[in-house]
Image (tube, rainbow, N blue to C red; front, side, top):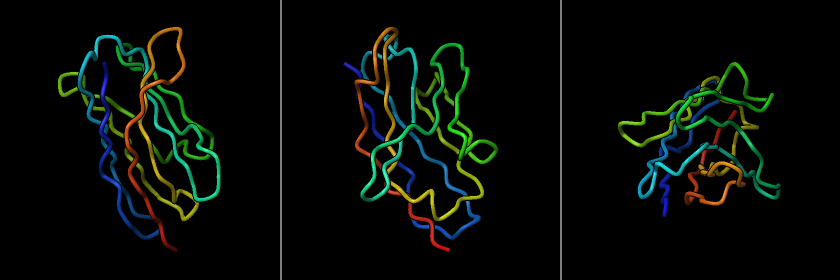
Length: 118
C-alpha cells in the first residue's frame, strides 16, 4: 500500500516561488505515474502536473506551463512541484496522488495549502 505525504505549502506574495514535496512510502514499485492536483475554494479539484515514476516524462495543465516544474527523486521516493512566478489564481490546496498502470489516481496525500496574495 502506497502512502503519500505532501508538504511545502505556505503564504507568499505574487511573483514568489514555492516548492512542494510529496514523500512516498510503502509499495513504491507499483507506482506508474505521480500527479499534482489543486482545489481552490468552492471549485472542483483539477489536474496541475504529472510525472511518470520510471521514465520521468511530464505533463502540465496550460495555466502553469513555463512556471511550474514537476520532478522526482526516486532514491528519496519524493516528487516535487517547483512553482515559480506564483499568481493569486494559484491559491488552492495542492494534493499529490499516485496511480498504477491502467488505473486512475487512487492514492492521495492529505493536501497542502498554497496562498498567493497580490
